[in-house]
Every structure is written in C-alpha cells, then in structure tokens.
Image (tube, rainbow over all chains, first blue to last red; front, side, top):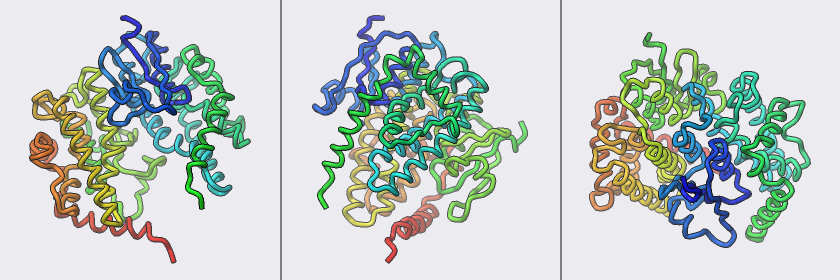
Length: 232
Length: 233
C-alpha cells in the first residue's frame, strides 16, 4: 500500500493524535503525518475531512476520513486485522477497556485540564483531588485488567494502554507545574511502573512529546487563556 | 439461560436505558428489567454495579456489570453473535456509526436537554437552533449510510438507529415545549419517515415511553433542574 494512502492530520501537543499514531505503529502501517498549525487557522484539508467537529486527529485512508480518536483506533484495529490486536478478544474485557477509555475522556482528562486553568487555590485543590481519585480507580483497574502482566492489554499494549498512556506527557507537565506527584509509589505503584514501560515502548516513544517542550506550550496556552479573560 | 441471568437496571424516562433494551430484543434475549426511581435515592444494586458513575443503564450478565449505554449495546452485539448484527460488518461503516453515535451523545443530546432546561427565551431559541442544525446533519448522514434502505443500519435496525431512535419520544416532548416541529417534511423528510418506522418496530414499540407521560415527567425534571441551579439568597 502506498505510503500516502494513509494520512494522519494532527498536532504534536495533542494526546488524542498520539492515539491514532500509536495504533498505526502497533500495526506497522506506514503513514504520512501532517502537522496542523492550529494557531494559524485550520487547513482546508482538515475542514474538508472533519466538517462536523473541525478537530484533529483525522485519519485519511485512501479517500475516507475517519474522525474521533477512539473511533480511529478501533477502525485501525479492525482494518489491519492481521497485525497485533489492540482490543481484547473477550467481549467483557472489551467492554471494560471501552468503559475506562470513556471515563478517561469524559471525567479524568477534563479534571487534569482544570488543574492548569483553575482560578484560586480552592479550585486547584479540588481539581487535584479529582485527578488523584481517578488515578486510584485506574490503579485498581490496572490490577484487574492486566492480571499480573505488563500492560492493561496484557503482554502487549492494548486499547486502554493507548487511551490512558497518551495523557502521560500532560500528566508529567501538570506534576511539574503544580509541584505535586500525581503518580506515586505510595498511591499508584503499578501505574508508575506501567507509565515507564508505556513511554519506552517502540510504538510510543517517537510520538510522545518531550515534557519540557510540552510544558513551554502549556504555559503559553494558559497565558493566552488568562489574557483572553475579560478584565474585572 | 435462566431469566435472571440477564438484568437491566433502568429508569423508564431515560433514553439511554432504551438502548440496551432494544438491543436485547433484537437478539431475542430474555432479561429481567429492574426499575430505578431516579427522582428518589439510588438503590444498593445500582451503587454496587456502577460505583464510578452511579447511573443507569447497567446490564448485569451473570455477575458481570456492564455500564455506559453504547458500550452495553456493543457488548450485547458481541456476546449474542448468532443473532442479527447490530454494528455493520465493514470497518468504515462501523466507524461512521460510532462517529455519529458519539456526535449524538456529545453534541446533539446536550442541545436537546438545553431546550428543556433553558432559563430564558434566548437560551431556548439558541438550543432549538442547535437541535435543528444537528437534525440537518443527521438527515444527510441518513442518506449516505442507509443507501436507500429503511434504516441507518440498512434493512434492519442497527447501532446508529438505536443511538438516535432512543431520543425520539424526548424529541416529541421538546417539540411540545418549543411549540414547533423539529422533524419536518421540509428539512428532514427522510428522518421523519425513519422515525415512524423505528418507533413502530417490534423490538422498539413496547419499550418506548408514552409521550404524554414523558411530557409530565419533563415538567418535573425541568423544575428540579432549575431549582438546583437557583442561587441561594
């Protein structure tokens, strides 16, 4: 299959874009990566490929655009079915992986973002508490899903590893900027070890953004948001 | 399989609860339905089965709880694989179904709820406009995905039919509140016809709530929402 037959439209700070790239890497699928310069306005290709949400990532397979990171990951798993499986084969394990991915997107990652944006010490503490509670739940989920193996998906990286692991760079930036360890030996020893394994996996390490670079980007985003707030 | 091996914890006004019930009907799976009263406190069984979100629906299969309506529908499709397929078989069609189901839950349904909970005329109008825009997109999606057949899923009800169809009675209630038709001959002719077919389908008609009863519930729900928002003096 020609390299340009599979394209990913993305943006380097986006954890959601990482998901699509990791999945393609797991399947050893060559693809062309297009960096959207979101500050300069969205490209024609993005607006045409994702008219509903106008967001990245978008996977373009031949002439077919696929949008929404977790929809893309499942599409990749089902299309390149001869490669290593991303979703588990057992229906209950699949439901469990999907459940925690939904939890991460709907509850947990929004609370990470809130830490950075929080106005006032109380709001910040509340957001941190939410993130920590979530990590305790995920530590427990790791125990159940991994069954003593290295990843949520077992011996290999799977759907939930991808869904969660893509947030690790932002998690590290948040730890740096807030001065708090969110993943710790005391509360989340299994996740701490899993995080290192995930980040050093061959399918992951080249697409994980550098923490320093991401921290700089994070500061700029927050400054912009705060600068944009109406004066009181 | 014993009747009590499959249970659904639900609440009759919830559109999300309809989804697993329709899916189980499509697969001809017998189940026990347990009604939660959402205006009162949550049952022990619900809190134990869905400790993370504490919400209905929950599917209990043997001792395994499965939560989140679309995840439950996919679970049902995969477990009872000898029954009619709910998700399409082609990966791109599956991706499209999942995409639109996600759109419905993340963008369209909040707009629908926004009409119910609107505090001002302006807020109501804005929410109605969003609902209408969404329906126009879904009308277009129907054209592409149904490929001339009666349902999004083709000849039979599928994943996206279930995802959208579960909101049809609430849509009627919202039409009543906004005093206008949201599904219309002019803008959403195909969806209008699809809505009739879906609502009268054998796997659907016995679980859809009655519009009048739901409208009464809607009034109570709106009052509850507005009260919860009221700033204490």
